[in-house]
Length: 343
Ligand SMILES: [Zn+2]
Ligand SMILES: [Zn+2]
Image (cartoon, rainbow, N blue to C red; front, side):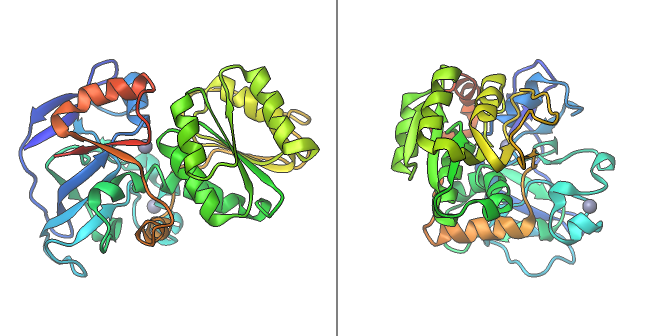
């Protein structure tokens, strides 16, 4: 079968022929319906994150069950499912409360999940090591569902933790309206009565943010001007939440300038920005956090929201073979919404 392979840091992904896997006891074989193309794959390919070369990329996956390994119940062939991405040990406290994204044994597992150390979903078939990592889709199309497993789950997890601060009259600022950001705007709209300000460097993405429910948008190419524009909107109270989906130095600097007192500064973008954290470097009561992905039960909630029409991933489909060029477009900032590879 065809698969998009990680060939080591500094090398481009390539489409190769690999053997179709067979599910062992407890495992599930999926026929992939769609695999989201995530910006963090670019970090995997360009930075030393500790991944060994030689696995199939794709950590936003959904499809249909093709075969069940021995002893797997609760599913049948043909069921549409999304794959929960961060694969934990399955038995520590974090995993038991479905937060495998915070697995206590993460360092010892040899990879972070399918497409992140283990074979992922940019292929015709994917092996999932345990049925607990699958979420039924019901009527939702796997191509629509695939990006939800990261691009929606990650901001959902971040926003849920910020909800006590997101009362009416408060403002949430979303920086970066890419794959995660375009879901974050919809999630905020569905979850909280806040005003939403979205910032990006691209006019098409700002237009999309307004269509998806942002009350105001700000061009962030000039950090000083953007900070002034956002402060104009939020007033002296400042932002109750800054959700930074980019994480580069300019978005760090911008976020720091618009936060209010007793706020939450959440960075989910892996852009490598830096903040000199000390007393006085943020307003009083500001919580700074870098959450990672989300929980299994939270993925069920995200899928339920999509099935009920409260959120929708805006996707562009590409054949699997075009993965290298889609990565190039993503790197150039040309993808609006989420690109999904369809084998
Ligand atoms: Zn991702
Ligand atoms: Zn664990």
